[in-house]
Structures are given as structure tokens and as C-alpha cells.
Image 1 (cartoon, rainbow, N blue to C red):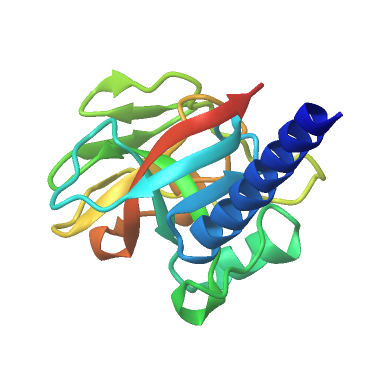
Image 2: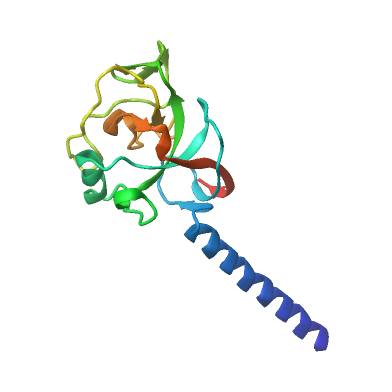
Length: 178
């Protein structure tokens, strides 16, 4: 009986400490729980980095503008009190950086190469018209944020370039599922 009680206390203590660590990590911005379909659902560790490159999965604060406001109103994402102006904290890949050329047609091309799962939609799943970005070159200090995991992701195809300074950090999956 005593052995079962010790095992129960250790299990309970470990569970409570894990929950406290998880809450602390999320509150401090070191962990995020992705609830969108842009990338697999689950828990991601956020780590600061000196510089970023194409292909990095990053967490960043969206730019406060009318498109992002509409994104919140239509339920694509939620405001985040940790971001300036309470803009959403998003999870996307860096698909283009300074001087890369983005071509928008029926799909997205970076420097002439098609991006996987990059079909461009004129309407969202609720029939609302989407603002489609024009073809463009990436400005100095900016990046093109997109999901190549889900073609229906709400990303730079619709809200445009994002300042590199808005990046919170690299996102590394800890526990995810499809």
C-alpha cells in the first residue's frame, strides 16, 4: 500500500510540475500551442536566433493593419496580448527574403520556382473575398511568410510581407499531431 501511495505522489507531483512548466513556457513566449491548420497542431518550442533563413519555421507578431483585423474578425486567429497592438502571433515558414521575387498567379512562385501547396484563392471557406497580394520583390528587412503544409493557410499571399523584426523565434515541434 505504501509503495502505491509513493508512486501516486510522484506521478501527481510530476504532472503538476509539468503543467506549471507548460503554463510558464506559454506565458513567457517560449512555447506556443498551434491550433491552426497552417502546420500540424501541437506544442512548439520558440528559440531566439541571430539571423533567419529561407525554410525556417518561425513564430512572429503580425503587422497591425486592416487585413489582420479582418483575419481576427473572421476567426482565422486570435489577438495576442504579448504582441504589439495585440496582433496575432502566427506560425509560418520563411519562404523568401530580401531581393527574392514573388510571382502571384494561380499559385505562388519564388524566383521562378513554384511553392508547394501555394494555390491562391479568391474567397475563404466562408465565401468572403480575400485580398490577394500582387507580384513583388521582398524589401530589405522583410520576409514572405507562408505555409507549404496547407494550401488554405492565411499567410503572405493575403497579408503581404512581414518585417524581420517581428520574428519572435524559430519554432521547433515538441508534440504535434495531424
